[in-house]
Structures are given as C-alpha cells and as structure tokens.
Image (cartoon, rainbow, N blue to C red; front, side, top):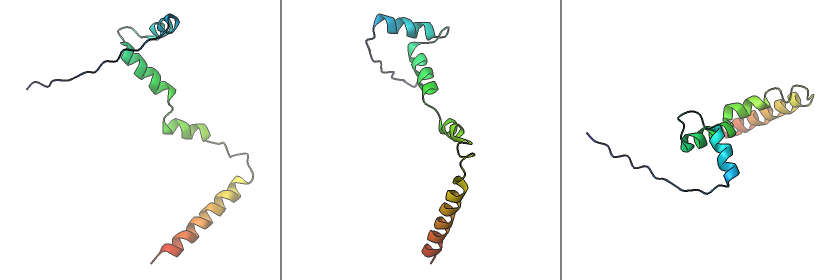
Length: 84
C-alpha cells in the first residue's frame, strides 16, 4: 500500500543576521523546520514546568493556609447545597 504524504512548505524572509544566528543553532543534519520545532518547544513551558515554577511560592506566606482553608470551607458548603 502506498501512502502519499503531502508536505506544505512556506517561505519566510529573515535578515542575514537572523539567518546566521539560526544557522549556528542547528544541530548536525537538522533542518530549519526541525530547528524551529525544537526552539518552539523549549520556549513554551509545559504545564508541569509552570506548576514546578510555583512550587513553594506560598511557603513563607502566613495567610496562605488560612486562605486555603477558607476556599475548602466554601467549596464544601457549595457541594452541600447542590446535593439532591
């Protein structure tokens, strides 16, 4: 069985200095498309990375536990009202 894969291409214009910078970032045998994908994935933090960045952010905030307990209390009250 033969599967025909259509690959669309786009042409973009960049200044010479940008081309040189990008070209120097390429790995051996890496296409510019692969380079762009690699760089885009690195620059966009995953949800896990975003959560890890926040880990411990409230540890020195004395009111954090009180606020958290209030949220849980309100959430529980809301659930009790909804139960049929």
